[in-house]
Length: 321
Image (cartoon, rainbow, N blue to C red; front, side, top):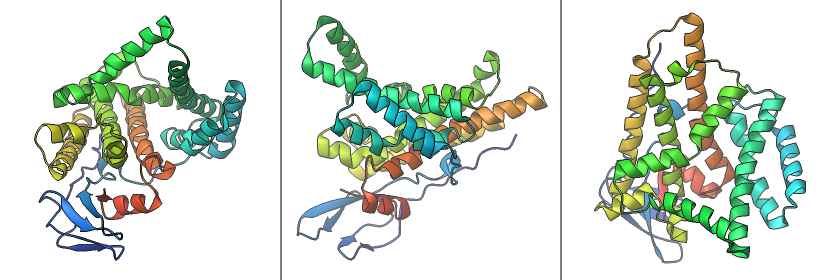
């Protein structure tokens, strides 16, 4: 079976570079710590060179499901009416555009499967928002017990854990495995449990899930800093002695390892017969599509970066803080 393309991550542009005529960054290849820049208003900012987010299994332009506009609108309207959603939350839901995420993750899904997948994503959004509202409104014992368990789980992604422990918690909490199952069903992929349990398939699932949350940690870093959120790999690496740029570079190294793990796993897949092998490739394609959908959705939705910042991050691989 053909292996996925590997990605070679460079460290950024060579020499000095000028951004928008206002920022001059110093440092060669982006590896010499934090680059200082003078902002338009005389304030100091800093730039980080980020990993190549569009390489390896995340490369290439994804296919869109043509059912997105109609079904996305229907799902949103139904949810807003059912939950009596307030205007502020409704605006957030529309901006999130979960239909676009599913369009890229499940491009072959029929109307029924596509609607279910979009409803599933929106349900997760509404459920999370509902829990937060209930916390504000009531301290009832049952809800407190649930939230206490959530807090305990989230605390494992704090800053006093090992990198492997943090990675394990993040890959389980990011939601990728759930979407793998959703897309598997939506695309009618038929595989037996022993194939899902094969080490190569398990490794590909893990690599795709890890690339999903790693992309999130890179793109959300600026927003996390602004809101004091420290559940981020870059924050953890800084806490363990890395400079900001070193932490970002190490994050890129981990992404490269995920790509290598995927390639090696695909290369070591056995053959279960022609028809089954085709289904295996379809499933691995679904895992790849979920990870790539998250990447494109993160840029299009503006959940972490505005339009100008997104262009800079994608074309120059620079994040201005």
